[in-house]
Amino acid sequence: MANNITAWSYSRLSGYRKCPRQFKYMHIDKLPQPENPAFIKGNIMHKKAESFVKGLITGMPKEI
Image 1 (cartoon, rainbow, N blue to C red):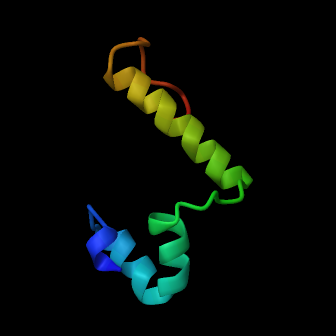
Image 2: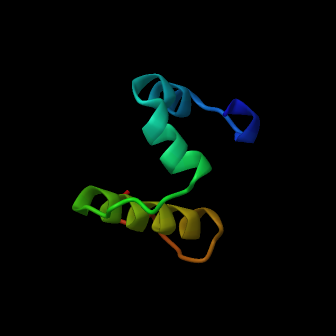
């Protein structure tokens, strides 16, 4: 399985150790994950942070 992974991180390794099958579903099979409020909020924050870093928006977003 590790031959199909192009990048490892501490969180990926921890996820693999916790549940190899879930790791496969997420990182190899790339099955869609159910969205929840924390996931949605995190995506919004990441997009705003990226926009700020790229200079697409001025001023630090209040969520960050």
